[in-house]
Length: 122
Image (cartoon, rainbow, N blue to C red; front, side, top):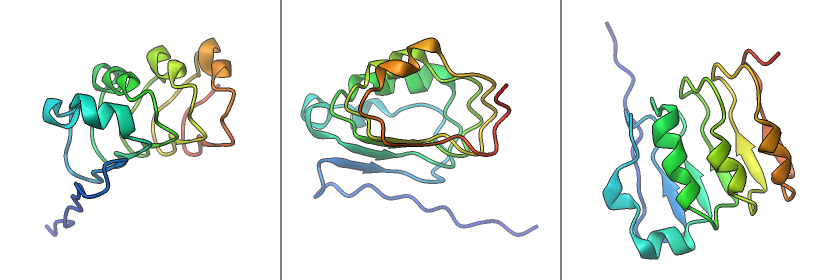
């Protein structure tokens, strides 16, 4: 059985970016959510993990987030708390198991690009 190497990176010199792809995350590490980081993070790419909806709800604290990538996480529904991220300009939720989006999704008035391919949307 061959294993796929994990890509795991966090560049602390780029305080506005959080990139941890295929890192095996099932929850949001609390040490990442410092007040300083919360105040400046504008890009989060957590694709290819196993983040469930309780973990995703904690991402709502990243109020300055503009780009959010959560592809391939097995997400069943988009947490309504994330609809409060009114600065979001792009969101990638492809390759999940989404069945529907919350009605509050329309609050994301700055959203320019959204990817929902390979889901189970009704």
